[in-house]
Image 1: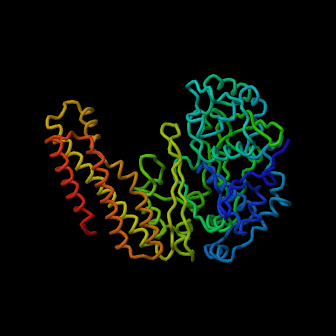
Image 2 (image 1 turned 30 degrees about the vertical axis):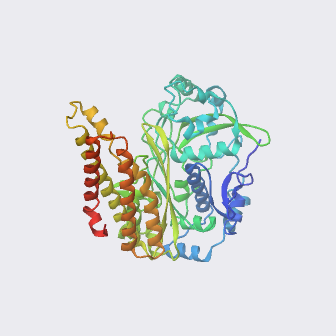
Image 3 (image 1 turned 135 degrees about the vertical axis):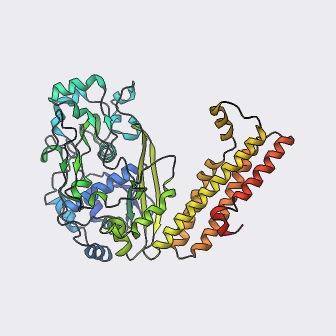
Length: 513
């Protein structure tokens, strides 16, 4: 059986009229500049990023790689054709390398696992990062044994998400570890997966007005482009033996980076219309290192916050660190990275898509996704607006906490001895979570207006006024449960007075009342 990604619909795209369609790899590149397909679109943000990663890997492998910032800019302005990539897929080195069920070289997989797949594999849910949750299976995760087939294209998307975002730790049940080691002759490292290359950071992509422009915007500058990782045994990779856990293979370019096989995996296909997958074997993948410190493709879109890569968290929305994204484009050391190129070579506005996987202790919490405007002529203004806009929201949150404390002291003058009980009672009046849940809309409106050319200070004043309204509404909601007696009325008055004073202090002093 066969499922060749170069000719079978496997990439989900959004068309200009708002429809979701599936395209083969050849169709994606052939129509990239037709203005019919404007973006990759899928309910899972991780699938969107993984598809972009694969398309970028194919571009670089086909030699579609800018050699300088000037060439990068020229390709974008002149809409350099993707004919070279289509030719590479159909008649060049890429031909025949994208069959998901090839018996010897299945795309993205390790055919060396064939002997163990039937006896030691799991149901395809094991491949679905969002559904498998902590796939180490120390608990009784019966759903992972469900052999209900999934479509080949869904299995393909789940597989490339694993390559990008796979969680670290044991990737198979304790009971089958020794069986795998005995059957395959491998040692323990094959059962212990490393964190995927995008699993501990936020991936940022520049999004243009069509798919072709988006791909060109995110091409890293390199001399050769590197080599695509199409299947496991086509090049030398890590040996799964004792003491090899820290061995890293040196990458040769951006195509190698975008297509790293983060998991050693094999799918069992079932012929049909459409073809499906009913069993998978998922093991540890390869670990890699860049060629030298001068190679920027591995950190092409890197954004640092307090010295660390920007990371996803459900407790902190991405917009709260938007200023770091804009600051990256103004940093003198940004060079040939994405933000350096956007800040110096770009001539038209774009959008920045930020996606990250939030996970705690190898348990998936969910995807974090946001979009920010970027205008090369308004970068400083956007950075300033983002920085001050977040500071205003933080000041409003502090004012709400202080107001809640005032209500707490009035209602509970005799504080409980237990800290846990005190914290629980204080949380009753803390409305800062209400504010954070609603401030994002005002913040994005602020950035959109500044990007469009409106006065930064005027828009910040509007943002500050909106935050005042949200904060007042949030506090009133929390005080609604107070008893209708003297103490309750006193708590309301004192809390509202405390909030009003807080919203006149700090950054709010600069933006009126």
